[in-house]
Image (cartoon, rainbow, N blue to C red):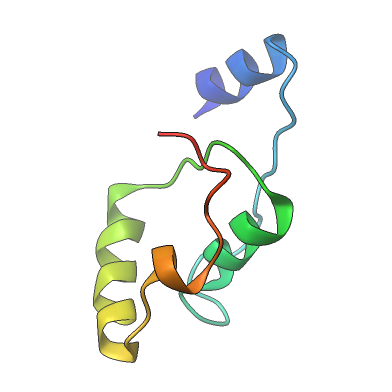
Length: 74
């Protein structure tokens, strides 16, 4: 993660670091942050994706449809 953050800073990006549990108060907190900030790059772990898939499927939430993630680049 350190290399990714420093590399981003070297090319003039702004870094947004979420300090806390990505599952508190719910599994949507990071997706809400992506939408609110308009970030273009979102780095998360495979473990978070797996946990989010289970929680979102159970709650009937689809982050790509529920939140505006259009500014994220592939």
